[in-house]
Image 1 (spheres, helix red, strand yellow):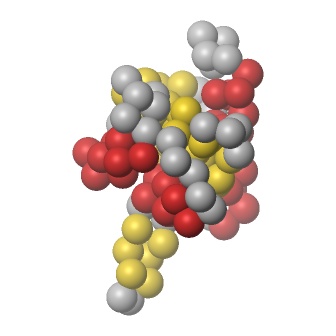
Image 2 (cartoon, helix red, strand yellow):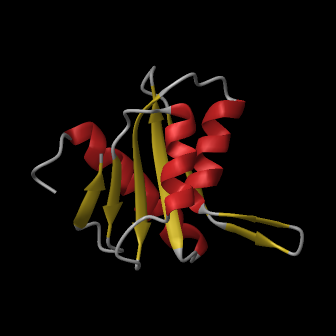
Length: 111
């Protein structure tokens, strides 16, 4: 992860911790325009299904965020789903989405 900054490494670490804490398939974190961070995991209930990034974005919005600086997704999948990127873009049009493996290794960045 040496090709990204410390603040971006931090949200990958937060996403990894959320994933590990709950045993979820995915963990995510976002950083808003004030530097606040929000971490989340996917939600799979009988009547509500959200991806980890969708939950993290929703948490940011419900806390008053007006923009996102960056987002991170930790997943065994190779990339982020289009719906995840779209959720990030709804709030942060220019925010990079860092996709990392479960061990924290950066796989790709969706610009």
